[in-house]
Each structure stands twice: as C-alpha cells, then as structure tokens.
Length: 327
Ligand code: NAD
Ligand code: LMR
Image (cartoon, rainbow, N blue to C red):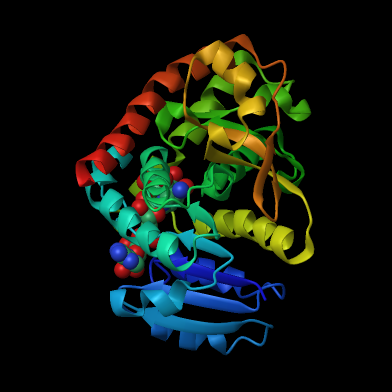
C-alpha cells in the first residue's frame, strides 16, 4: 500500500499536481487535503480510471484521516507571491502554515517522506525540520525542499539556446531556491561547454529569476503552478518508485546536510558549517541514501556558491528563530 497525501491540493499547484500523481499506478491511495475545496478536486480526479483510490479532506478537523499512514506527503500549502514581492516576504504567513501541517505530519505520519514546495523553501524546510525535532521524530533523510523547477528550467533554457532536445539535458542545480542561491552547474553539462562565459552568465541569471518571468506574465494572478506541478510530480514519482519498487533514483533537493554527514564533509570544509543546501542526492525508500559529490566546478560557480552560502545561512537562521519563538 503506497499512500501519498497532498497538502494544499485545491491550490494552483495542488490541483495539477494531484492530477499528475493520479497517473501513477504505483500509488494505492491519493489523499487530497486543503482548508477547503479538496473534496471537489478529489471527486473530479477520482473519475480517472487509474489504480489509486482518491479521497478529499477539508480543514483541520479532517487532517488526521488525510494524513495517517502516509508514505509520502507533498506540501504546496501556502501563499504565492504577488507583484513586487520577494519570496522572503511570504515567510511570515507560510512559516505558520508549514509549521501547522508538519505538526500534523509528525503526529499522524511521522515516518513519511516529506516534500516542501511552499516558499521561501530555503527557510520553510528549516521550519519543517524544527517541528519534527520538537516532536522527537526528526529524520533528516526524509525531508526535502523541492527545487526541481530550477532543474527543468535549466534544461529548457539551455536547450532553447543550443537548439537541442530539452528532455536530453540534465543540469544539476545546487545552493537553494531563491535568486542568486539558485546555482545551475552548467560546467557539468557536455552540451553547455560550447557556450561563452557571457552566455553561461545570461542563462544562469534567467534560471535564477525565472519565477519573476512567470509572475510578470501572469499579471498579478499568481506564480508558476503548471511547470511546478510537473516538477513536483517528477520529484515525487521518484520517491513513489523508491517506496513501491525499491528503486534507487538520483535528483537534486534542498536538504539538511545531516542527512549525509560524511558526504557533506568536503563541502562544509570549503564553505564552513552551512546546515542546509541543495545538492544532488541518491534516493531510496528510506529517503536520502547519500549526497552525490560534484567535482570540477568552474571558478565562477565556486564564487557564486560562496555568496549563496551567506544568504542561505540567513534564511536558515530565520527558520530556526521562528521555531524558537514558538517555544
Ligand atoms: P495557491 O494559493 O494557488 O494554493 C495554495 C493552497 O494552499 C490553497 O488552496 C490554500 O487553501 C492552501 N492552504 C493554505 N493554508 C493551508 C493549510 N493550513 N492547510 C492546507 N492547505 C492550505 O498557491 P500556489 O500557486 O499553489 O503556491 C503554493 C506555494 O508554493 C506558494 O508558497 C508558492 O510560493 C510556492 N511555490 C514554490 C515553488 C518551488 O519551486 N518550490 C514553485 C512555485 C510556487
Ligand atoms: C518559482 O520559482 O517560480 C517559485 O518559487 C514561485 C515564485 O515565487 O517565483
């Protein structure tokens, strides 16, 4: 029995994400949770003739039945940016939402693999981790900040530039999920080697601010939802395959480096104690198996990483402080 729960299922990301997860025949129970309207989404999606049973649950009074016995929980609950806002401006509201949902996960599904989509990911993953610590069920190998949208954007934008098939290009993206903390490592991609330094700089900047591109195009009606749903499903379906079929996958994710202290030693030797970082990882049914080292990054990437670490440390401190203030 594989149970996947989506929190925020009636939202802009939640609905297409639920639809994409319904395509998987490895999921037995797809549980959709939101403060309202999850039952309607569930009723609609349940008519799709794939394997999983779909249930909808509205509000705190139904959170227990939504979450209990979940193997994987996807959290896209929260407020998206409006024009003129930075992701950090969402922290005040979304930290509280992520705290409440993670409290329920820690209570009703403490062994689940938990994927945090709600922004600002660089800090909400920390808030989530602190909740699990508080409830004595913290396992750093099971909490993921989803930065897969940065990976698919890197593939698409590079493919556009070099006239290649985007599906054939994989770009590791490390650091975090906000502005200059988003660092696509184009030096690892064979087909990017023909690009000039200036072209690499331009495409890196486009990936870093791609969220703004969508925000602007949607003219005040939200941020990325559809590509995000695809990205979230790509990440989550790897976890589903790991849980259902014991298959090992690789992907990047913003994680606690405690998940693999040995694998993060070299990184922390160079950059100091960071705490959380987006890195390539190997995934299994128990979560993170190990961090995959990236070798021979370019000097420019190295410098970007140094700057990213400073911003990340501030976001991590914000997440920890928020949690301490709750005590
Ligand atoms: P949305 O407003 O369309 O949907 C959010 C949903 O969350 C709503 O249905 C709302 O009712 C629900 N919700 C709010 N509080 C809740 C709670 N306590 N419990 C359960 N559900 C709750 O927003 P969206 O466009 O789907 O974006 C959601 C979040 O994802 C935002 O924070 C956004 O910034 C973030 N996001 C992250 C990435 C990424 O790459 N990680 C990409 C895009 C968006
Ligand atoms: C994105 O990268 O599109 C998301 O983080 C949403 C946003 O606020 O830009």
